Length: 614
Image (cartoon, rainbow, N blue to C red):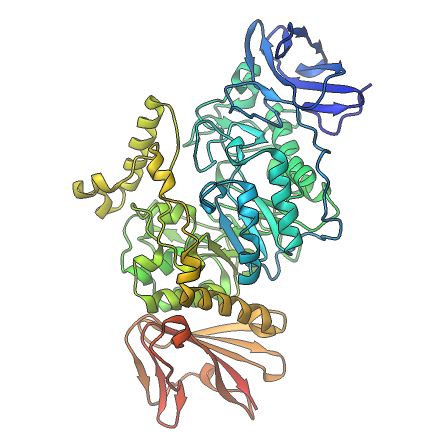
């Protein structure tokens, strides 16, 4: 009896390799080893087939013959060195020597998240090259990397959301042990790493699961990206595949958690929902702390595991509401899916206090209700950002937010994101105002490439300006290499754009080093509207150690008085400025007194932080 760690895939065991696959559709399954005759696999109960091959070692190439057809890649392959259409590779999961024995994992509290796509993060686009940038992230103050999907996909480049071999790290970025080395090095720099995983669909090219079983998919639910995955039966092969995959990334690659893509398209009516079981499996896979982040367009707050241990077990959800309000405040445009956001002060006050803005009320863009009640959920459970991979690419030409607004507004929004109570997330290059666009790129075969390009153009057409024919030539075809290459960061800008680097470095240090701003000694948060474009947030600390944050997206605000008790300092104290976005170090135009003997002055397009001092 072979002692396996996982129920699926090829595992080195003893003096050979054990193979196991689910395939209830074919009558006969044969193991195809490169350079050898096919071997009939033993049929087990429940649709499984297995075989132990003595003497076989890591590096062997193999596939499965299904009723004489194939060979097809292993659905649980640990390596696809030539992509999903070619043979799988036996990988020894224990060959890498880890150096992170003292690493205790990551908790949500206090994190500064940094989203990156390894293929365009460096000129080389590899995990090994990315290791050299970890010191930059550490010095910036990043504590948790969110890596975009790395499951094997076809073609030379892509975002990763079209993965088809869920266990096989994309060969475009290096070997599996190169990924292990990146995570290991990140831990040496005191940075955690979570992996973006896609359990709501599989890519359209290289997906051979249907040849193994029709039970992997279901027609019960609609899915905008293809066939819906079938999770409804406890012993369903897709459920096992995904649960083992989640555990695999955490156990075998020491990831500090997962980011779950588009969870609204993970459908399951089972008594134990697959999302809940997935969270339990992930936490049981390690003695370290992990962070589970979800994307959920309908804003189902019930997915969250709060301090009362409710919900499906997800620690945090992406907060699109915060982003949309920020972009509208920055650009003045609110068409398409921005139409319910106005970039007004009350939106930011509500987001700081309550996370999602839509918690069950009417949402005009979808002509229905959106969200679930979350007034009792702490803001830390909402991930705030002003850029991410989707939203930058959806600007049409992939422009960054600093290119779409004024320098002052960008500094103000950066301060808002990093100093409000939610968990902040940066997108790669944001910290040095990268000039590189981030475009949608996907290397597909010609017919599929045309369909993807047409679909992308149709999606962006919901924006009035992007639907105009004058923009047709501006939308880069996803399948062209120049689209991919132009999205790579230019790291020389991290040296030349020191004003932006200083802004982000100082804001993160301020958040992390201040007990009230970080939430370590904060009692509560309140806010007030000062004008149509200005507002304040009052953070109450212990024993009167309060902070007053003031933001202005409009012209200079001058008030002889402000009839609002939130502007009054605690008894026996006065307000003293400790930070301003208008400091020359950040490219600002100089500092002015905020509170003075003639009233208050808040510079246009600026943010400041005041502390109550004796």
